Amino acid sequence: MGFLLPLSLLVLLAATYTEGGSARRHRAARAQRPRGGSSPAPSETTAPFWVSISPKLMTVAPGSSVWLNCSSNCPLLESSILHTGLRPGQTLRGPNWVSFQLLDVKTWSSDVHCFLTCAGVTRGAMARINAYKGPQSVILEPPILEGRQHTLRCHVTHVFPVGFLVVTLRRGGRVIYSESLERFTGLDLANVTLTYAFPARPNDLGQLVTCHAHLNLDGLVVHSSSAPMALSFFTWNTTSKALASASIAALVGILLAVGAACLRKYLLMQSRA
Image 1 (cartoon, helix red, strand yellow):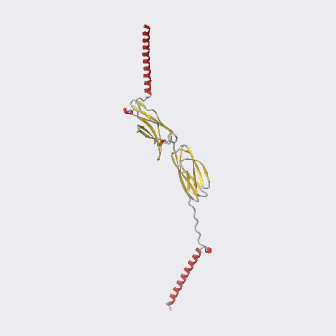
Image 2 (cartoon, helix red, strand yellow; image 1 turned 180 degrees about the vertical axis):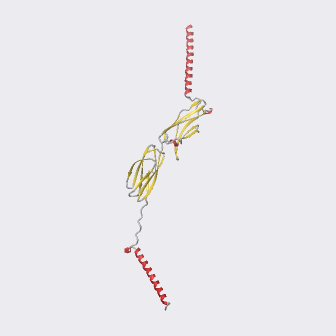
Image 3 (tube, rainbow, N blue to C red; image 1 turned 60 degrees about the vertical axis):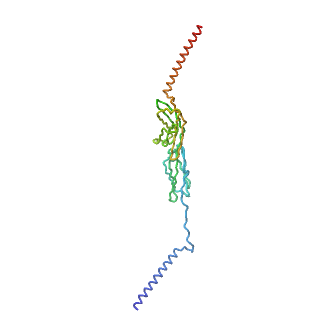
């Protein structure tokens, strides 16, 4: 009898624990179940927030002013930021767009970053603006023969950016001199003059020389060339012209004197006859 009483108490305690656990689980399930017996509503989803900039790539003449439009699918933007090394101008805004003006573009290649914020989320887009001007003209002066060397002088006008310019001289189609102007960092249109002297050779007579200007802009190559000029051993420089003029004048004087003497002799012979 003393043994059965503790065993009965254990069974009763186990049953009470089981009932309590079951009751707690049922109450938790009822609490999680929606009222009215309806099924759980699916969570709302929103479209991804995107930012776009237009145009993404622009090529302009140096000194131009441009507009960039930064837009998104956000119904109401909170803020906008533009990161660029170019000089900003006016700004126009709408509910989901911003237009930025950039003034006096004088950098060959500039990256412009636009950042828009919507509902606490910030996203951005990037555009690139290139500014350049190919040579207005490439002019090769007539070659000058001084002593035993030829001198070539080439003019490249109104070009930008000069730091990307390479000027090349060719004789008979072969390169005789080439110079890169990387040392020039100016931000304005410029004129460039290249002078080069080289030894004269007997077979230079009749050879054609040309001047070429190349703008190599990260893969975009702008090329211009001069009209060809012929080399000659009789190319006149300033001193040669002066000497030639003096020689011609002396020769004319001699011919006139001889002619006058012959005329007097002829007239004297006629008078004696």
